[in-house]
Length: 437
Image (cartoon, rainbow, N blue to C red; front, side, top):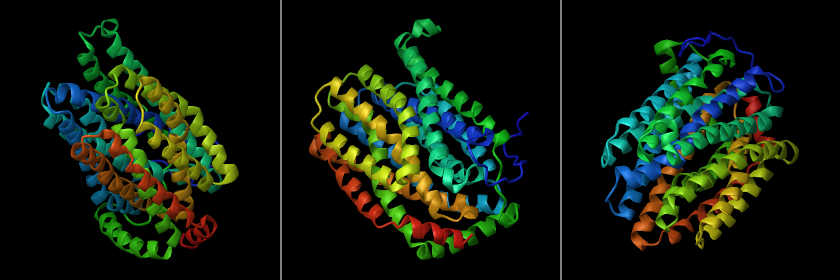
């Protein structure tokens, strides 16, 4: 039987070569939490928020409210991520923190089932809580990469996680879409009830597929003592890490690059459905496009892992940024659902790649014994950027009356990200990180 949530009973075996039970169990957490990213964050929540919980509201106002909810969830992570990571490193509690975040996210997601029509504020509040659990959980999940793979395997193992995430999230999303299209097949009254039940399925899926990680992924060794000593030690470690980042120049440069380009990527993910509705596309067309992205993303993420191993993760990230810039230019002139489908395929080819190679590149640049804390900074900066992106797109849409114009602002973020990335010396950065372990 798997250990209870919060127990870290497995002893560290940091260097596990190849793809084995620990690697698969770790990657299955991506399968677990991607149900939230697809069905809730990218799919049904923005759609249901605009058409059910904000029924009768102005289109621009509901877009702004959605962007504000996304930004508030990111803002919470900004303040807590590095400290949580440092405390988890000190007490050897990465898995315990991950379980707590999973229960928070899944619990708040399931509670969306009970929100009445028109109650947009309560829906937004629960969404902020669920998103906070999702984002915070990623800190500890990412940090466990160093517990299941050697540096030479980071690209492939990281890509496996994203590939399973696309597949698992896509499968549940396909089921949820079928529930909304044919609710009577599932004993449901209508599409609205099907969407609400979908939130319950996401919560159950998220918890269920976290169990393999609980059983077979080792907990890295603690760097200090547990309990209150871990809290105090965590804040001391956090202070020290601020100084170390100044010495690890290439970590800082990469974080700046990631901050810029992942903001644009996250904004596209979160606001795509809202953008499609705003320019007059049918909701059914948008849902089909999201499904296309998921299933294209599964093999594409695996391919990007191989590209990272052969040509280096930086090269793969440059390719993805270039493709995203073309997507933004095309989307700003898009008129038909057919074009939205084509863009969904193109995004699916690069979305998992840019995410997985960013994670594996960063893992090379940081000391392995402080992985949770450094990944706390990684997630903090990514989410700090996401505070700006959705609000910026929403504000420009309201101010200009043109959602198309607001989309073009993302080109600046992609350009800055590519420039900062060009200044990262991966070889030198890796050597400095190993010296600090």
